[in-house]
Image (cartoon, rainbow, N blue to C red; front, side, top):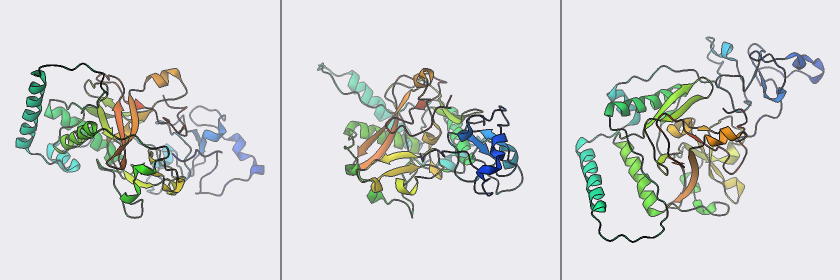
Length: 354
């Protein structure tokens, strides 16, 4: 969420060329052959080849501020040549014990059966209700509906484990407060500029229900897939109703002032404080869940905006800030999930998104 680099430049691996040398004028993109859009034309720190950020596959949303190596150089044997471009990874083993260990699932069949029976009992009780009071009620959030087939749920979990492993992250379904970053005491919804909406009690219970289901291995019906243009992305693995809680956005919590020039393209605003030095962001590069892989819409085209099927909402939950991704319409099986990265701040560069 840091600002895009304003000018094309060589990264710190080599000294920058002087303006009077004129060598930058001859730089062209290896993919499209054009030297246009100079501010978005990267120069490889290994071989000096040029590539537009939007010609890369998958594309990059912004020019990185540190070292950058083209796909050819980053695939060399040198471990120092790291590229931010993800490649199609090797599939995580579709083995139940490995997946259970990866996600630290506490499985108790008796408890799961009891929970299912309790849920069904509640449904029957609601259906047997007598007099109905007709009134306009606030729409409530819904828990996700897990796939019925346990093997299907394993495939869904394996797809997320594959993406997390490929990006060097570990699974976490909670906000984390690591040493050297913002402490939990800094996460105070009361500091939000203009105030923050409180998550209603029933919706908070629904959120907790979703968390407990995941602890039992009852997974959201989502698949992480790899797209050559978009990179990792998420699609629905069964029909999802409007207002369903998809996931909470999680990761390490840190102060925005410490991350303003961070190259991470997945940071999320957690707290926009009246005092800027108290503002917080979520950094999912080390610890995260499926939220990190849900892509954003292109805000600059009508077709891009039509793709949005999720909304990103920040809530006050028991005095702390939390970020939820919620379906804002019915979502068909196989449909990819998208939300607006620029819901309020309009700082994220999405003009090259598909």
